[in-house]
Length: 182
Image (cartoon, rainbow, N blue to C red; front, side, top):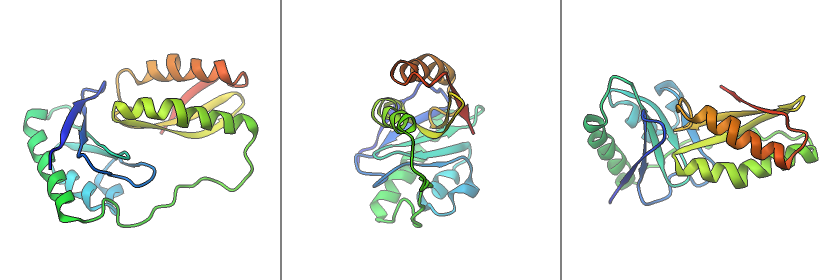
């Protein structure tokens, strides 16, 4: 198994590409070891000193490290954990966590915002090892949650305000502002 690594715009986050599917559908974000309870892979990754966050995309894993740790020391250990996990055949996530999608009918504006985020924004940020999830739209403000390499990235505010906000305002006149939420 050959695992590629890529830097991201966030110097504290590295993207690992194992060459196989990581998540069958959706993404998973673990901000700490307690959140990783249903994921054997995330738990193993958090066992490495300095791992501060784990994010699973469809075909990649991003790891965020503590600022006082060095990638030269951490990278071989993380590569070993990822390789051992995929060779073992264990699932990435044991429990099937259903994402809360809501049952209420969406307005055309919300549908349009979600469609733009899913087709234009998420693929672009996935290339950098992150994800952006729609959290709501109220009084002209779109609320988005940044995950993976996007969370804590020095350029995330620029991406959010100048990239995503400008694009959404262009296509959806009802959008006045975009804000990040935890």
